Amino acid sequence: MNHPSQDIIGTKGKELKNKKIVLCITGSIAAIKSAEIARELMRHSAQVFPVMTKMAQRIIHPDLMEWATGNPVVFELTGKIEHVELGNISDLILVAPATANTISKIACGIDDTPVTSVISVAFGLGKPILIVPAMHESMYKHPILIQNIEKLRSFECEFIGPEIQEGKAKIASVEKIVKEVINKFKK
Image (cartoon, one colour):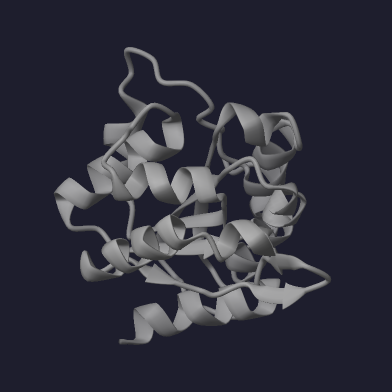
């Protein structure tokens, strides 16, 4: 039996039919957009599986993401090895929002959160990874972060650049994120 929140699946299109997207949410204030991102992906027929860091949970509650997606939220790793299961079933890992901290951890192979553990598994399986940065503009301009983004691009990670406004590197619009995800599967 499907969760009632999944009734919206496919209401706007079938472009993401049978696609399983793991939505990794980190501790940027832009996490407030995560439910909206998940719901819009679902409207285009995707199944969305949320994963959250502890810092993301300080901004939005896991219950919101379970309601939004109809799927349980992974916010800690247990003996069920959720990170391996999600890596195996995923068609795409979407990190939205991605903090400077998480981007740098990914680039250095550090996997100490549910999000970075899922991404480590995805790398090992050759799964596509799409990263959507969101942070203060000064952090986005940090030379080491810039190097880490370039390092990840060299490993075929793709990025959806932020919108620079009001001294912030704000998360890309929901519409742009969904469009990029759809285009990724058209390739």
